[in-house]
Image 1 (cartoon, rainbow, N blue to C red):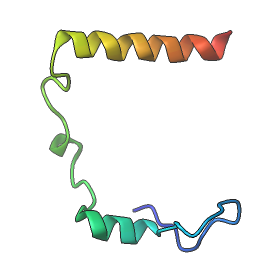
Image 2: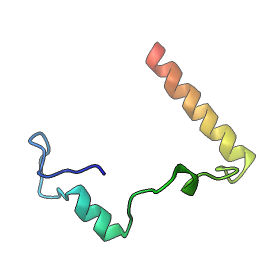
Image 3: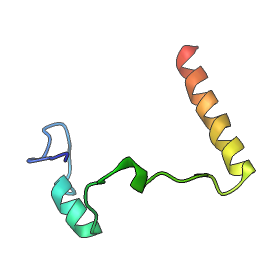
Image 4: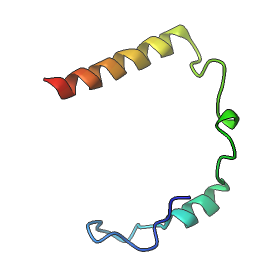
Length: 65
């Protein structure tokens, strides 16, 4: 599990919350198996899938130019 034992020096402000506390507040835990989060189709529609691919390609091409 990822841990954040103390506030990073480069981070300003009083809103720092350790990772363990965020996990506790959200009531989540480690994933036991990748199959727990796998779905047959993670996109609700073909349009959502197309939007995702367009954004992915745009972000990849932006780092090339």
